[in-house]
Image 1 (cartoon, helix red, strand yellow):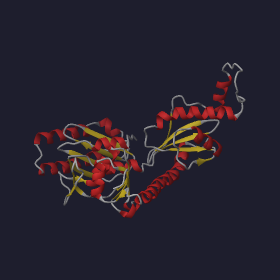
Image 2 (image 1 turned 90 degrees about the vertical axis):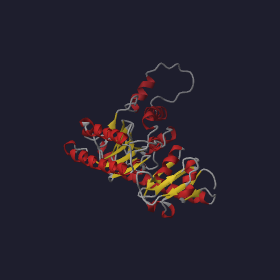
Image 3 (image 1 turned 30 degrees about the vertical axis):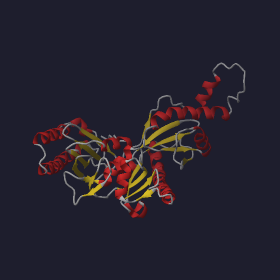
Image 4 (image 1 turned 180 degrees about the vertical axis):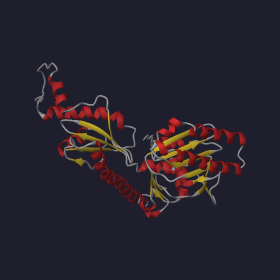
Length: 372
């Protein structure tokens, strides 16, 4: 059965701050088909063996290794957990704790062992997650559809959401009115439509605030313009135009996907435009050592990282100085990964993209908060 629990960028930043003498990160392909999930459970056991082999070769303490293995064994034995999966499973474990995220994205398998977790694949999953909220809006009805990458679209039940504009208009006209002051005609759209849209905005805010999912409008041009003039929720620039009343949740999801593709392309395009502008102010860098130091001291505002980049080594916790490693082992870690984590924890916007999307086709590109 499908089940997704995607983390926010803030959660990923906090995850990156975890430190332990053994942090095991495992990314595992899975399936929502419960009858076929046993293959994934067996595969996880094999990936765990790879992780423990690295720790044993590094002389890791046997008692702590046993505790780590026990964390995984409890997970492997949890039949209820395995009955609810999506397309990938991200597992982050130490000898003391284990955390999982079931992801809609199809991620390649990976095993990383270090003193901190490997977060780049997780960042990729949330950067272009193909997930959004669609507000299907007309005067006769309002629906909120949650769209995910490979999951069926579903209509959400939103507390305090009005049924339609007529209900809002009737609610207003049925109230006692003293006759004092100025009032538009109760049947005029200049009166009931703004009220209707304000109630929708108020009901929708708790759902979308704090979420990384963008909001896409599906409505007529008139209602789109009016909603944008009233709402504080920043909806995607492109909308699904027309009356959405006869469109099913699945049809709205299909219509949302090209809008999402254009939205993601626009995010990268906007980064490039700002990067070019800030370059003239000495507020950009593609140098890994500079980016590590700047991330350590909160100097990065926006960051693009290569989702496939592998640069092993260390970054000093205090100074941000980089020491490059020859190859990955149980001691060093991904430098790009750590730069991304430090940037996230200081409030930067981080996107994991393909190398061709990065200025100069570098492993990273940063827009800075101050000149260097």
